Length: 213
Figure 1 (cartoon, rainbow, N blue to C red):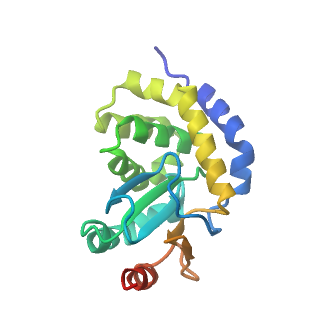
Figure 2 (cartoon, rainbow, N blue to C red):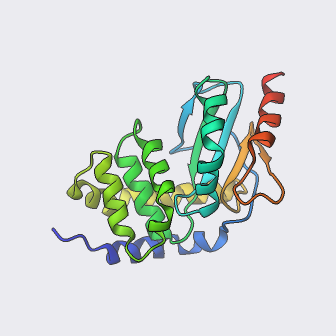
């Protein structure tokens, strides 16, 4: 079966157009720390003393920069040691159709592979913004064990798109206006002038203060 990416693109873009218009790459906003439908988390168990939430998108250049520059040290210091519960919440940014497809693939790959797939998309963000994002979507999906047929079915599944739309709406209802946005126990952490979200130093200040309580 031939994959009609253009058809999926139009459908995804139309369903999320109003939402995408409200989100910007550079903005930051607040939000709740309570569990939300579709949360993907690693690190400490639910109910941990400190929860760090990132609202991000695989097509967000600032998010990709944070993954490259800050994530390894943050993960080693807080996630691998189970000091915090790290939650990633999807807020799709343009091109919305590519973000929708990528997040669907990450979820279809399985919860145990979700973060690996998302990080692989971040590592290939230039290709996702290039003339042929479809090949990158398929290559990453194949690398996670999905066949071309499974990837196509995953992307085209209307339930996946509906759930993604609702996650966008939930983020906007929480007051999040852009990606990446970071919250530590519900309080937004901002590093003024940063082109890649909250710095490790600023996140550590907020996290360590909560751990000390």
